[in-house]
Amino acid sequence: MSLLAFGLLLPAAPVQAQMDPATQRLIDQLRPQSQDALNATRGLRRPPSAPSESPAAPAVTLTPAAPAPQPPPRPAPAAQTARPSTTAPAGMPSASLTVNFATGSDELTPSAMRELDRLGRALTSADLAPYRFRIEGHTDTVGAASLNQALSERRAAAVGRYLTQRFGVDSGRLETIGLGQTQLLVPTPDNTPSAENRRVQVINLGR
Image (cartoon, rainbow, N blue to C red; front, side):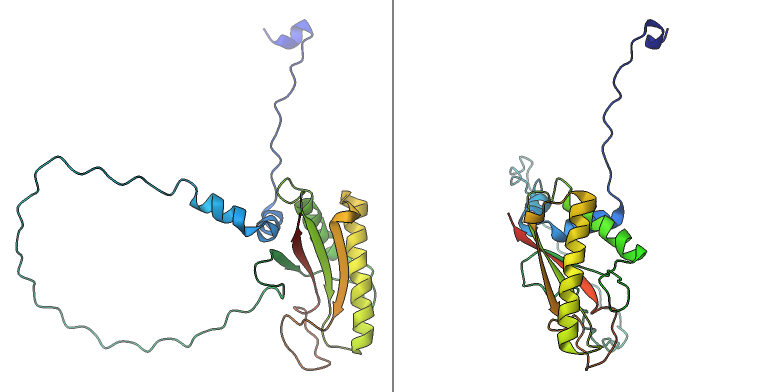
């Protein structure tokens, strides 16, 4: 007979919250790598094997067969240079996000909010909750450098406000800064539109 017939209601077992793959990738990018290295090497070492008690098998001398003729080597393909994903200093966990704003404005678009929702879930996860982060606004080279600098500052501040208001991220954990077109992810001439350079970069500053 069901326990409900006696008016008893057992509490439901807690359900482990699962991150969507995009949020988990952000967590992996922003988590300090030293912990990743520890997790990667844990359990991989094995003690040296004990010497075998069985007698060694007698050595057998084999006559090597004549090598088969080999085809001439093919020329190696041209090396491809991997494109950078961040301009953060080496060793600092970071991630670059495409956050779309209204043209010439710090108003977040719906796609920007979806991207920042993933960032908000990442920053409030158990893995990243103890850390502080720098939110950097970056632009491409279209327009005057002074205008791009001011715009990037407003956009970085808008990202910080969104994370604080929607996800309750403590503003003391966030440092917002605009860098305009001074740290291009993909170097381009002046007045060159580039979606890769119009980005928000997040850097883990430690505890």
